[in-house]
Every structure is written in C-alpha cells, then in structure tokens.
Amino acid sequence: MLVKKVEIAQVMPCIADPAKIRVIAKADHRLEEVLPYLDKLIPTALYSERGGFITYKRGLSIITLHVSGEIAMTQIRDSDEAVKILNEIKEKINDTWARRAEIDLSKLKERIQLGPFDLYAYLPKTNCGECGEKTCMAFAIKVLNEGKKLSDCTVLAEDKYRGARDTLVSLLESAGYEV
Ligand code: SF4
Image (cartoon, rainbow, N blue to C red; front, side, top):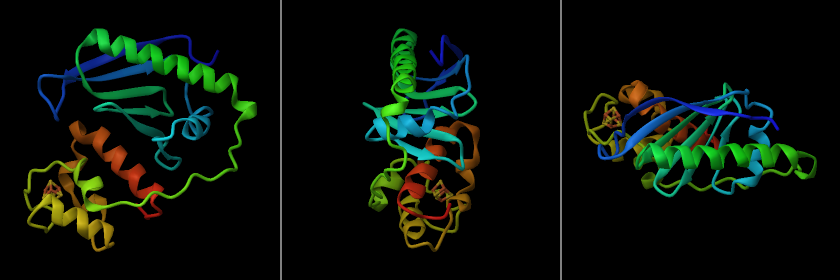
C-alpha cells in the first residue's frame, strides 16, 4: 500500500461556485512514482511531468494530485463529499500502484485537440485586459495560435486560480504546446 492516510488540510469557498467548497488535502506519501501509472488508467487525466501533477475531472470537480502528496479538489458539496472522494482517490492510487507491473508506460496517449472553449472554461473570465486582450476568450484564441503565453494572464498567477492554472498547463502540454 503506497498511501495509508489522506487528511484534509484546508477548506475554502469555491471560486467557480461560492455555495461549494475547495479542498486541499495531503496524502501521507509522495506521489511521483504513481502519477505516470494513474495517467494511463484515468482516461480524462492530464499529466504534466514538468509541473509534477496530474489533473482530471470528476463530475464538475477538478481534482489535482501533486507529486508532494497534495490533493486539490474544486466544486465539492460539503466535507462529507470531500471525505468520500478522498477515500476513492486513496483506493485508486493504491490499486494502480498494486497493478503497476501490468501497465505499459511506453504507450503514448493520443494528443488532444484543443479549441478556445476548452481553455476559456478555466480562465478567470474577468475580461480585465491585463494580458493585452480585451476578453478572456480573445486571449484563449491567441494562446492557441501561439501569439500569447499562459503566463501573460497575470490573474492566473493568483493562488486561488492554482487548480485552474495547473489544468490549463496540462491541457496545453497534452496538446503539444510549449508552456
Ligand atoms: S489577463 Fe487573464 S483574466 Fe484578464 S482578460 Fe486576460 S485572460 Fe482574462
């Protein structure tokens, strides 16, 4: 068993839906060894080796597992749901780790095709203009055309957008962009 315990470290209001919560939890073991295997077994997973995390969607929630053992979850109904999902994640990690000999890491995942709405979904949607574009949608289009870098959106650097930023990095890397 790789992970014996996962504990909730922080609970905050969710940015996307203030009626829900954002949860940061911590596993009692680092996760770098298991992340490449999880990437193969979770069809929707996006893995950033350079960033040291994997991110995937579970319903409306975005779940991000970091090599450090930190687990971030957005759009969670309440702490009961958080505990339930964390138990699921722990089981998934341990099950994947137990089956690692059967998983072929050399098999490449297909590159995903990105459209502007895929990026826009995770941008702050403030249309603040800090990136030099009038709207977040215009920024998404520019990033896809390689006329802007993700780092040009300074708002995304705010800590509250960390989960969204990690997902955007993974999305772009999985589609073959230099981030
Ligand atoms: S800086 Fe970010 S939040 Fe502001 S308009 Fe550009 S993409 Fe949107």
